[in-house]
Image (tube, rainbow, N blue to C red):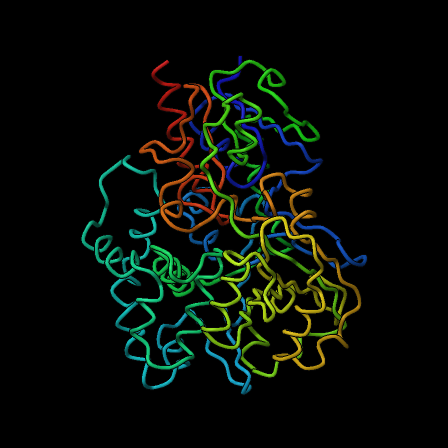
Length: 469
């Protein structure tokens, strides 16, 4: 009998398996698709030689993850590549605000009226980042905070809605960039704790940047898999699990799946019926004949580029997708251009690029024209560079990854109390109605992102049970 079986070979499932194997437990992972990766994959979606990331591409939380940093993933091929700028937010006048590794450079891009405000906002946390990230990404109630004063100060700044925090700024540049940071979790700007979302992304950039993985996001999953196998763990692909009886006997079962799938497989009935899924996304992967012709020079060297004219336009796009049930007329776009720092991703002189916009859950339309019209506002001539494109709306994304219910790449709405308390209102979020069954997906704290911390935290709950039994 195995000590633990993990269902789903995404970053969280693989991390949970590694953490258990490191402690001497026998572990096997079962994945429905023919390769490992979940939301961290790399595939040739358009033309031969163009290597795209179907979901995550830039990894501010991955490079800062306490779980990943404690593993020797570099020995297994994972290399972080840092673009010249972590992120840029261009404006229609050809200028841009930037999120730089330097607090001073970031503040200066906001203009003189907001530079001091930004420095005062982030500097109390920049020198305590490693302790802070450990505190708010760790297992709830598992230990006392390492730095309760800094954590409390962060809570005072971050727990209110981001719209409150943005009142500190006077000009549109800082407000627009910060609104875009919040929108990375597809949450309306006025939601509880959305200020913390923006702060986390900003602080992560100042600490260790927003890198891409050399060769693509698949490198993260492959490194975790290779490390797991060296620890004695096993990985089985092309193995779809429809019920618990499909799995070998084990003392514990850990699911890197959506709560909906877990309920169906384990027979939990309506246990997770109150869990809400959020807006979906419409994503386009491009093969380009050259770099994106951004008007703002800062955007040409940034790994990630946020596209939204101002805070009001970004807020309207989020409301349309999340609350009004329609695709936005002027969508807010998150775009990543990995080949500005990793030429191995495309043939010589060519580039890969992706963009996604928020759309209602399950939306079945085609947003290609709307997205490219928005890109042309900030990068005139963009369409002339397109060699090929691969589009994926909510139905296609859900077909690729069963955790993306309705096209929600965060595996659950990151809004309201569910941003903090997920998947149920419980002090033990990784436990389920069955004492030997656990959940470790992005539906659990600390939530979405390729960081492995949901798997790390769930593994702690699992090994405590295994030691008791």
